Amino acid sequence: MIIARTVDGLAVAGPEADEWAALDAAGLCEPNTSLYWARALLAGHIVPADKPFTWLLTDDGRSIAIIPAVIRRERVAGIMSVRMIRLVADLSTAHSDLLRASDADGIVAELLVALRQLPWPWDVLRIGNLLECNPIAGELRGFLPVSGFKHRVRREQPSYYLDLPATYDRFLASRSSKFRNYLRRKSRQLEAMGCLEVRRAGRDLDVMQGYRDLLTVEERSWKHAHGTAITSISRQREFYRLLCIGAAQCGRLHLQVLYLDGRPIAFDLGITAADRYSYVKTSFDESLRPASPATVLRARLVESLIGDGFRCLDFPAEPYEWEEQWSSGVRWHSSFLVYNRTLGGQAYRALTKIRRRERPAPDSGRVRHVDPRA
Image (cartoon, rainbow, N blue to C red; front, top):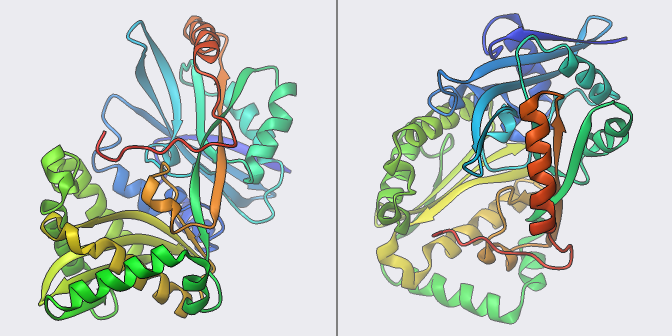
């Protein structure tokens, strides 16, 4: 029998944390459901005004799901403030998910029961960016209509992914001749500038040295001038530092840095689980843009992932135009809004009805690329 209970705060210490780490060790769920990700978010993304809590689900005493969340006041359209429940997994731009055991069926039904019994006031529960192929999305679509909650389901923009073939030669053969020629030309251009070397944190590069070199690249990237580099935002700097440390301790960190004559010029930061690699961050030295160091390093990344037996490279954030040429296709997302019967919940429901008419759901036949400089 599945039982859901609610505990005050994020269960990042004590026996709950041990259960959290054990569930994450299976590698079945998205990286942002992990214990180390939540601990990194505590460094600045969860603020004193938030009300953090955790849903713990057990089946005959065995932990089968751990779902951390926060209730926070959010200003909507400049006209109202609502108490929004946001999953911790939703606080960063990636696929949303619920951390659960492989045999944890039916947890959504118990989660909705626990939602009714929540001891703190709330207006709206938002679960955004769930992959439509995620079983949790199917459970929500099945249980919400019979839950008694008013709700809304909306299709959201997709993200790219790459099915990794058995060999790097097969990957290159699957790309266009224009892609292969460009990669070959830029590789030669960079090699002519000096000694190129790729190092991976935790293997031939100290993890913290790798992180410092990552920051060096960020400071020299186009993002720095736009104020969006990791080094431009103190809470982002701390989040990624703790993320690298936590992921490395779990054996999940995959940080590659490209050096030119010993100088870091590009990096790829990802999280691994089972046979999947999830892109987290990438950047390059803007002064070397004509030589495309990011492209050269990404090709080395694909080659190394294939060599290590990985089967999927996931681009879990918004769809960027550059990702398309590296991908096998897209996977679409859905977002779910669950409205409480409070005044704020009903007002927000009315507003989303108006917005639905003004902003139709994305067309599944067309991807709207995000401008990274916007």
